[in-house]
Image (cartoon, rainbow, N blue to C red; front, side, top):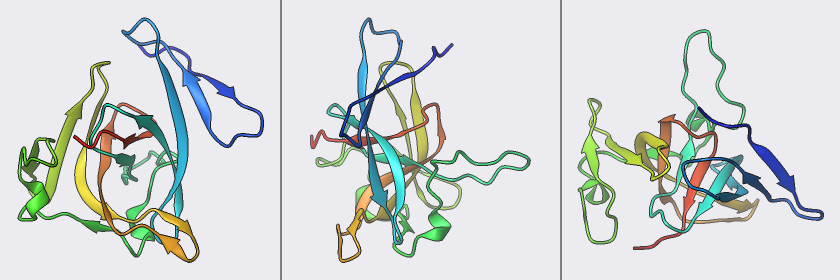
Length: 161
């Protein structure tokens, strides 16, 4: 089972770090909050230097169960778009993006990713902007939109391959 998560807040900082128990003897995670979408929705993401894929926890409409408060609701963003199966980035194991992908029943680009600590993320690849200010945003980036994940936060993958 998962152990209790304890937040360590740093004075004068908007980021927090979480110390938790896993199968590894020591582990620490840096959680940052990023404004994603148009208008922006703040998403907590774990900074991960070992992952190529960045993904966010997406809102999944489930009967009788409210979504997590930090989940991203794609229906509220005008810059959100899904990646179809025939998109060039949805080919398994292309040189710049080594994430295995498949085609789901809706002809959307689907991914499943498993981490060394036993956690997993699964969902569709999407295009979305990081909105840095009212006048500044990134071009659309490829992200995972996880609807089935064993983690509360998304991942900001910093490994460019």
